[in-house]
Structure formats: C-alpha cells, structure tokens
Amino acid sequence: MNALHIRHLFHRYGPTEVLTDVGLDLYAGETLALVGPSGCGKSTLLQVVASLLTPSEIVMHNDFRGIGYVFQQPNLMPWMNAQDNIALGLKALGLHREARRRQAAALALRLGLNEADLGKYPHELSGGMQSRVSLGRALALSPDLLLLDEPFAALDVGLKLELYGLLREQVVQRGCAVLMITHDLMEAVRLADRILLMVPEPGRVIHEFTLDMPQAERSESWIHHSTGELMETWEVRIAFGLTTGELEIVTASHGKHTGCQV
Ligand SMILES: Nc1ncnc2c1ncn2[C@@H]1O[C@H](COP(=O)(O)OP(=O)(O)OP(=O)(O)O)[C@@H](O)[C@H]1O
Ligand SMILES: [Mg+2]
Image (tube, rainbow, N blue to C red; front, side):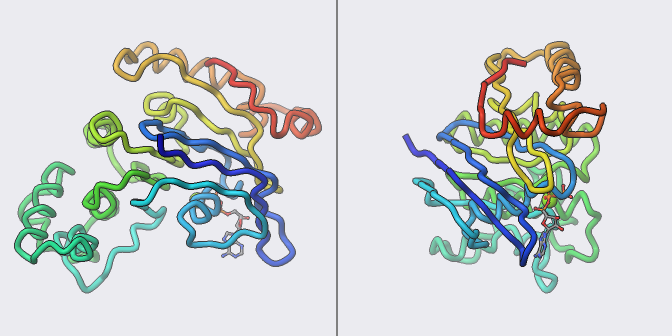
C-alpha cells in the first residue's frame, strides 16, 4: 500500500525554527487533518511534503507519485479563465485541447460553478469561486495524494457539504490519500481518520487523535458530540489558548502519538 512517512522534520527560516521534530504517517485511502493555531507551521509542512520547500532536516519516504495541491491562496493563472485554469495540468497528460476543456467543464459543474463562470478570469471570480477552481485544478489530475491547505475556508455551509462529498469520493472510489489543513475542528472530525494537533514556537505535533467511527456511519449528532469532546481535551484547550496551562506539560508529551480516541 502506498504511504508517506515523515520523521525528524526540522525547518528554519533564517535563525527562526518553525518546525521541530515533526513526524507523520499517511496511507492510501486515509484522510489526515492538521489542526493548530495560526503560525504553527501547517502550510510549511505541506510545502515540504510537496517538495516545494527543502527543510533543514528530514527523513521522508513517499510512495505517492501524483500529487494535487490546493494552496492556501488559490494562485490561479490570471491570464487564463476558470476552465483553462482547471484544465492546466491535463496538457501534461497528453490530452488534446477539446478533451481537456470538456473534462474541466464537467469538473467545474460538479464543484458548483456554472457555464457562465467557466469563461471568467480569476479577478472576476469571488474568493469562494477561486478556491473551487483551485480545487478543480488539483482534482483534474486524479492525484493519489491530495494536499489541501484550508480548501473550504471561503465557502458557505451548503457548498462545503457538497464538496465534502466530492472529496470523500476521491478517497473511497480511488483510494486517494488526503493531508488537509483546517481551522475548523468540526470539519476535521467529519472528514478525517486521524487528527494531528500542532502548536507554535516552534511548530510541533503534540497529539494525534484517532476517529474510529467509519466515515459512512458518522451521523450529524456524532460529529457534533465528538467535536465537543475534542474541544474539551486539555491538548486542544492549550493549543488554542482556551485555558492557561503549563506548556512544559505539552513539551513533555511531544512526539508521543498516543492515539487518544475522540
Ligand atoms: N517564506 C517565509 N519566510 C520566513 N518566515 C516564514 C515564511 N513562511 C512562513 N514563515 C513563518 O513560519 C511560521 C509558520 O508559517 P506557516 O505559514 O507554515 O503557518 P500556518 O500554520 O500555515 O499558519 P496559518 O494557519 O495562519 O496559515 C510563521 O511564523 C511564519 O511567519
Ligand atoms: Mg497556512
């Protein structure tokens, strides 16, 4: 089974240590959520996995070949319309122009964009539309590893639920592995098999929560209840500054993946 294993990841920007001794495992068909306060190094970690950034130190084993990346900022090509932005990567697969455009249009419609949106340029699209085009660009390539940096942050609740379904399809039908950053704990509980909790200064993983309930059996009430329980854990309370606590306690448990059940 394809897998990604990271151990002893350290990264410095100049003299500032932003990631220290980070480790994670991710297998095909799994969804791993990264949560933690702003600035704790989540995006930096994703860039390292995508080999867009060379860290100071790392031991990494990565079997995944096709990687789809949805950046925190949509980063669309300003001179291309929505349809061509989605179709961008398909050229490399050798598809001719009409097939690329057809495939991109079908995907755009599934992402809740309409015919008129296809011809719009990035500056004519709302933030939520841009993030859907960015998601479409990543999905178009049928990647076996999806790296998602807060892909749903700019979307309303109805659209979010629809796109959660689309993401689940990628995992269930194609065995895609997903490493996703979110600020929304309920989203993490809804979508993830495991949740990695990070804290800043320097960025590190302090806990891994395992959600044992099969995705198909997660009811709305289970999701709400489990999110509430997660919010009550001392690890989450300390990470998000919800309580005063001795950070030494956190540091002492650093690196220990206890697999606490939510
Ligand atoms: N190119 C860079 N040069 C210098 N410092 C950087 C650079 N990119 C990020 N940083 C710093 O590294 C730290 C981690 O940044 P990162 O963007 O990974 O955080 P994050 O967890 O994704 O935050 P957010 O939730 O706000 O997106 C921050 O202190 C940030 O200021
Ligand atoms: Mg970020």
